[in-house]
Length: 132
Image (cartoon, rainbow, N blue to C red; front, side, top):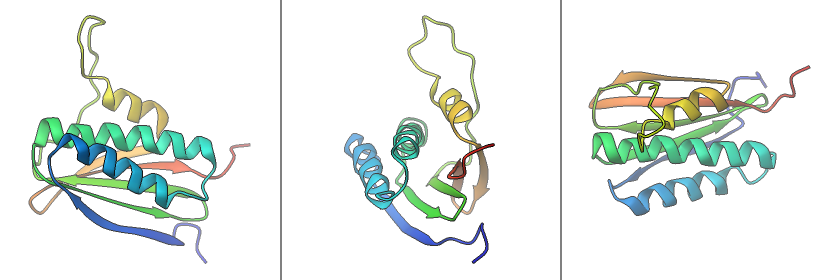
């Protein structure tokens, strides 16, 4: 099997723009990642919380979550109903928000955003391979 071909996929699930959806999406991802190393699970949970919270706060539309596991990585994707892509901000210490994409940028091995029909897709990858 090719290293980047999914060994297992989490089919897209749609969530309503409600606070409880962030928790439900995070738990769905954690359940899917049952056999992934604990550190990767924790990071994935944190990052999906950031992306789904962004979808809730900035898009205010239903969002979908899906994921793939390959031999070498976990890819998580969150899609929502607006085309505005997230940006990494530099908030002042006194600002309450604006740090979510800083976390994604710092903790994910790679991430990106792209327009899709009816909105945008934001994704991140976490490596499952120890760097040498």
